[in-house]
View 1 (cartoon, rainbow, N blue to C red):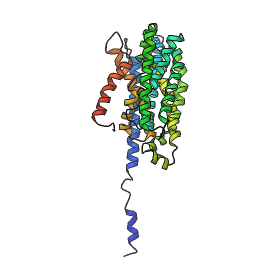
View 2 (view 1 turned 180 degrees about the vertical axis):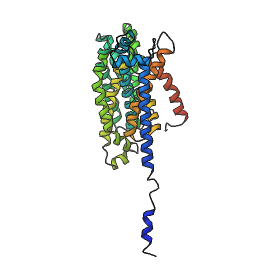
View 3 (view 1 turned 90 degrees about the vertical axis):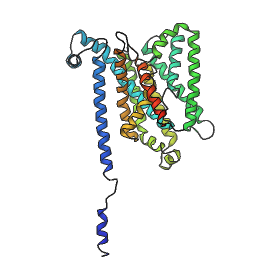
View 4 (view 1 turned 30 degrees about the vertical axis):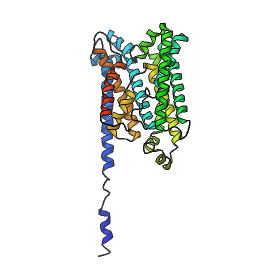
Length: 352
């Protein structure tokens, strides 16, 4: 009898063994659905506007070199606009995901932490004092402003005991954001000539952008994406707490610095190309986690897919809601994001 006991042991399989393949298949299916949604959003962005263009003409313009007026509109106006929407949506969504991860704050995003406002201040100064009046000229100032704001927030948070804790990062970001808003308002009240030009940029829009802007910012999008993807495992460990992350062999400071640099570069991409578009960095990471779970190796790619979907759909809705005029994409994303933030608070998903 005792000899037969070991024979029955292999019959007991681990209870969670089938879960991993099922989880993987669900995540793969969700990713495929997000890719389809992105392709549909791109098609809508190319086809819908003040003048609707049938999908057949869109394909003809893109693949067969169509020479009609509709083809010219698509190639010269809507393709750059759509590319900007893809880049900015992905950049802001990735930046928000990383910032929420490194601060362990579910309402962190580039706007709340002052990074977007740093870019805005730099653009205001460029308009008012440097004589810069083109979107392509704003790019470098926006990058510089985002970088300076990020360094300032981290310097404040890392000073004193305990280093750059999540609470200190959030408070430092709020303080820098308030300061930069005051600087912006001060410059605009003393340089009234810059107000109209800055107001057009500040509202956030992908309209009127040219291919030159795409060429200027895509290398930074690539660099920022590589940086944030490289800390995916570190973000997973950091979510368990700093002590646990250190026990798992993660260099917490390196994760935060690398992720912060990546988020700064990505925020600079978004703000430089389209202005400070709100709520994508806040809402999309939560949607991505709801779809694929908390593993950042899946959350980051899903956010990169869903961010452009949200921005492009918002832009398309803004084109048709009050014809023949347009509502800027930044306004539409805020209209979508505010109810989302209210729902987030009502669900008590934000810890005390």
